[in-house]
Length: 581
Ligand code: PEP
Ligand code: MG
Image (cartoon, rainbow, N blue to C red):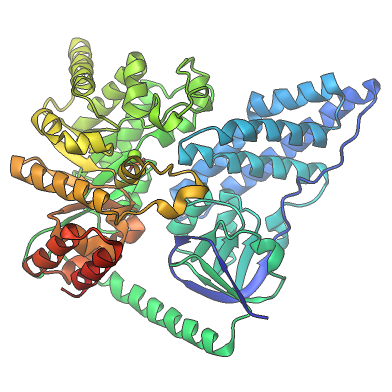
């Protein structure tokens, strides 16, 4: 019987194949109390399983293909660190010793506690790191059960398979690549989960958050994954299959055609040059940026570097090396390094941040991003010095997240001056004219734009947070996800206003939120005056195609009509005309 499931689209494209079900997480374990004399043996059993998983991860790391996305190595490292983390290891051992739980029970109990803690974290990215801990625990449980990990059973699967799982560890994704799977579907996950990030970089059509998919879909069921819309069609009717096969071949053709655009200059039909830059998370991602034809890095999310350090923040030298590497890989093209954008996750807490983040009633409105950096001036100065030092190895810019107040901007600029002074004293070189910009991602910042225009060299609109804060929709809360609307008139007005005022003041402005990488919105943004986009490298060519087909003059009227519309139907009708212009 044919039926359709809906989830979150995370990686574009259409996959048609047979379902390959991976057993659900082995979290349903035996619970029993052990005798006092068995305690040390039980701890030893845990240690042995931990070592086994370490070896598994080492093998995964060693087997990484040279062209594997750089995130892969980082994810495996994160899992290795989780596997050593005292919160997981020591607490589990304590439960074995003090409560006499068997190791499986102790481990799942500790996972439960950590999960509750993670559920309270506002930041969507960090919240989703819960999945990494679950995946590590799952590996340990499998090692305890003497079973192979989920992926070991997959070898030899044929290339028309679509993986269906409750959840997938990012580290396992690269094995999917070598196994040439067509796509994947998971019950869990969100747009910014590691698994989603990796899927996008591998270019595998994927839908996550397809609730109960692994329970409803049976082994070998014929399924279609529509990664553009997050739809999974199980046992499709012949006519539906035919339609999707057709769409699939059309897309393959489009992809091949897109490659031809790689070396052509990005300009509109009327000859306006448009910059398409890349968003990166790790220095080596700069390679993908260059390969995709990006003309710079518009957003380097440095919090990824910080998150990989559970017990300490990266030293200045380590940060400097990372920023310098990105600058060198970009070979003179601009690299916009955003200072740490995080509230408080475990690694930062363990540095004694004392930020009260965990107990904040509304962490999204709490001590995050620049607010946190300003409350930790030594940490912030360390990062600023590292960025400044990297500036002699390329064209580096500093981008500050979540600014809203004049005094925050002024304090930040004071600290940048202080970092420069410290480097001067030490006789260390940096670019004295380094540009400093602000993310416009809080509505107050957009509305009070003159504060920013006067003080900063450039602006970058972070639409992800701008939407969250304008519409009062928690990015991380599924219950209100349907209200997260980039086309809400209030959002469009703030973006249009920011673009217009920045242009008038002669201050360069870009968009680096997800809207910039959505080809359906390219013309709208162009029509609002945007000339610099920054997005995941995989989106660059498809956005470029839209740019090449656009004529700014003909977009003026339809885009003005979109901005003059308030009723949703009017907005939609006006948008259709933008697409046709
Ligand atoms: C944004 O908010 O749009 C943005 C680019 O930053 P992040 O997604 O990292 O919050
Ligand atoms: Mg943001």
